[in-house]
Length: 195
Image (cartoon, rainbow, N blue to C red; front, side, top):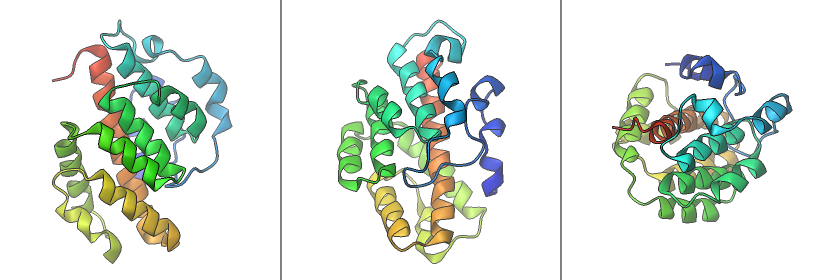
């Protein structure tokens, strides 16, 4: 799987993918993709997910993730900080990781706890890492069994501080895998189709 095959259009229904920038978000705050702003403002979880929602909080988590993907950290933060669930804390943690505010990100990931998605995410990251060429700084990804948010925060901080483009490239892919896994999980929770 290459960098270009992680685009939203390959993983999400068209009605969701069309509300997301086709490019992967940066590790840092980036620039808001204003072409999506008005449409996202009009989007509500029920219309987005096309069903009567079992969990409105999980539906709002999906919106928080979409704002975040498109670089609207403040809007994402406003939503995620109002959701007192592990998933809300996870989106909140990702937002602070991108600010970047490593300490605050770590705090919110501690509130996530030992999430059941960590094992699935670890497997997806490991599989991806074994299919691409990794710079030395990211070789640890091939040993990923359970997702370790603190390790990922540290890796992002180091890659940004060292201006290591190759490591940043790989970590952006991994952050996208994390985003897709969490979005899918929240979507299933919202619809009541979570296994």
